[in-house]
Structure formats: C-alpha cells, structure tokens
Amino acid sequence: MGTAILIRTFEEDESKNEAGNEKPRNAGATQKLDVKIVNAVRVSPARETFGGLYALSNLDQTFPYVIEIVFTFEGEGRGRRPAAIETIRESLAKALVEFYPFAGRLVVGSDGRMAVRCTGEGVPFVEATSEDDIAALGDVSTINPAMLRKLVKHSDGAPTILEVPLLTVQVTTFKCGGIVVGIVMNHVLVDGKALTDFIACWNDLARAKPPSVLPFLDRSVLCPRQPPHVDLPHREYAPRDQLPGLVVDPQTKPLVYRSFCFKPHALIQLKKAARITTQNGSSVVPTTFEVISALAWISRTKALGIGPHETTKLLTAVDGRPKFDPPLPSSYFGNGIAWSCAECSAGELTCNPFSFAVRTVHEALASVTESYIKSAIDHIELNKVLVDCGGNACCISKWSRLPFYKMDFGFGRPLQVAPVRVPDNVILVASRSWESDDLVVSLGLTRDAMDVFSKLIQHELTLKSKF
Image 1 (cartoon, rainbow, N blue to C red):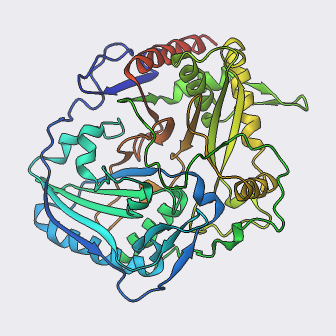
Image 2: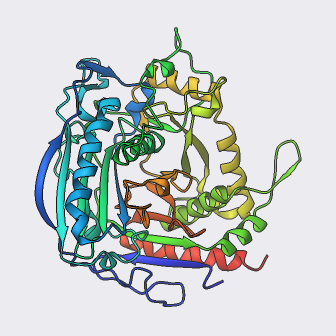
Image 3: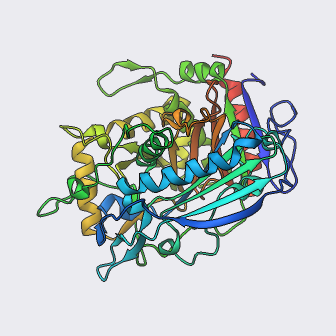
C-alpha cells in the first residue's frame, strides 16, 4: 500500500515524505522561480454595461474567502507569446460584457449586507515573464504557495474582503513558450461552477466562437421566503460577531501545506472497507468523495487533538442548482452552493469503525435538499452568520468535477490546474491532471498537526489495504 498514496510536502525546509521516502512529485520545481511583471492594467468591459447596485443573495454573504488558481499551458512557442496575451486580454474584455459584475467592486450597505457596485472599472490584468522553462514548475498539483503565488495577482495586505477585487488575472509567459494563467476570485461573488461558466465563455470568445454559456444574473431566485421560516437545524453556520467582509483570511499561525495523491487502487480499497448500511437497512457503496472526506475528517480531528467530548464538524460544499424542482438554471451566476454538515463528538468519530464516519458524511450530503437550502437561506436572513470554518470545524470542497481541464484559449487545454494555496480550515479535492485518475487532497495545518496528520492518514490507508 506504500505506493497507493503519495504525500507531497512544501514548506520552508522541504522534508521527506512518509510514503516510502520517494522523491517529491514536484522534484523538478524550484522555490526560486524568477517572475518579472512587465505590464499591469485594468481590463474593462468592451462596451458599456449596467451601472448600479447588483444585489447579492444570502448564500453569497457567508463565505468571505479568496480562491487562487493556476492553469498551466504548453503554449505555441516563444514567438507567439505577444499574440496569445493580446487574445486573452481582448477576449476578457468581451466576456466582461456578459459577466459585468466582475468589473465592479464589493461594497457593504447600512444593513450590513454586501453587494456589487457595477462601476465598470474593470479587472486587474498583469502581464509577466519568466526566463525559466515552464518545466521549472514541476507538478503544480502539489501546494507550493512560495512559488505559485508569483503567478497570481493576489491581494495580500487588503484590510477586508471588500478591498479584494472580484477577479484578477495574471498571464505569465515562460522562456520555452509555456503560459500560466493565474486567476484570483473573490468567493463572495461566485462559486466554482459560476467561475467555470465565465471561463468557458471567455475561452469561446478567445477562439472567435459564439459563447456557449451566458450567465443567469437574477439572484432573486434565491431570495428568502416571506415571511422567512427555518424548518431545519443549520449547524453549518456560526454567528458572526462583526459586519461581513471584515475577515479576508482567518489564519493566525503559519501553515504547512501538504498534498496527498490518492491512487485509484487506494480508493477502491477504502470504498470496500467502508460499505455502509442506511437507515432503511439497505447496503450502499460510498462514493470516492465520501471516503476521502471521512478519512480526512478523522485524521484532522486526531491531529488537532480535539477532546473526545468536543463536537467536530465537516462541512461540504454542495451544488444546490440541481436540488430544486425545477432545477435552478445551470448557468446561475453566484454562489449556488449549500453546505452539508456532518457532526458528532470527536470520540464517536475516532473510536467507531471507519464506516461510521463515512455514513455520517453520506447522510449529511443526502440531507441537502430544496427544503434544506430554502431553510438555510431563511436562517441567514434571520441571523447574522458565516459558514463555520473555525475551531473544530472544517470545510471540504470538490474541484475534481469542475470542467477546468476543458478550458482552451486557443493554444490547447491546460496541462494542469491547481489551487495556489488553501484557506485555513479548508480541504480541497482536485484532479491531478487531465490524463490522470489520481485525486489530490490538499490542506494546510500548523507544522506539528500536519506531521501527525500525515502519519495518521498513511496508517489508515495501510490498514484499509488489508480488506
């Protein structure tokens, strides 16, 4: 089982991993990547768009985080770089005509709710170059913020989420002709599905094709009921003790980032070990995501030393668009996600068989229905709350089904797509590459907790391989 999972570490002093002391998967990467910014502008919509206040839904108000992503492309050779950058920039301006809220700025009203003032001022767009070959990046599916954050226009130093642009783009060209498109999105405006819709439209315009996706911009479809009424408990939220937008990133301690590459064989063994019996007595084979979620939840709870009588929670981002009857428009532009909440005491989680954690996750996911989402919207309306990603709780999000690898600006699909870093108390599950069935689980913890987490997850996988 030692080769079924590969643990990859990036921190200030790169350590050996616990999966057989193999060379890191990112062995070709350099921490000293040389990136030079050569131009920085704002790209505004190609023509005049709506100017005014664009209301955000209740689901947009609860997750004030920033997501940073890189897309790596082989490119078309060094001589074509200026043309490629021009194509990306001009098509971005055209895409912003349809997705115009990206070109505005986030504001907060006297009622404490965030909204977008559609100013048309545009999206920060950075052109950068590197004299390195793109191979210097190695395998970017391993979280390596020290290197990868050179490839995005981040907003470090922003005092609140309100000062973080709704979207930024950086295009970095490499000596070999390779290209990296780095995107930073303000999660208050959109979720991953809405972002991929935008990029798909942008790609179509870059290839002189009519847009295959146009945004559904009316967020009133997720407005609270009148009068609001909460039908169900919503432990996925925690009371907010301040106005929205006053926290960009809650982390207070330096984090160590590690990525865990799950091979298909390891996932098959985990699923065999975790067959669950539902409340009606039927036997269910859990999904890949459910077993990964359960394993990460158990290992994190143990690594943090959460007391056996303390409550621990795992919150999962669930796309709510198909949960409605009839479904919301697939191209709904905004945060269409609801959060399931798997909850129990740390003692129950860590002392019961693995199937207990898997069943708890499974049942929490199954509980996210149209009624659950409407109740959550009303709960947010009546209470000032944020998604509970603090203390003994953590969030997990699945990127592996988002169509990132279908993106094409005209010079081929990306070689790899990966997060640049992971927010505190968030776990990301992503595909390793376009051609691979491997899944990469990435997170950040303090150094001591991460060392324990790594050993625990490897030990659990070794045990499961015996089934």
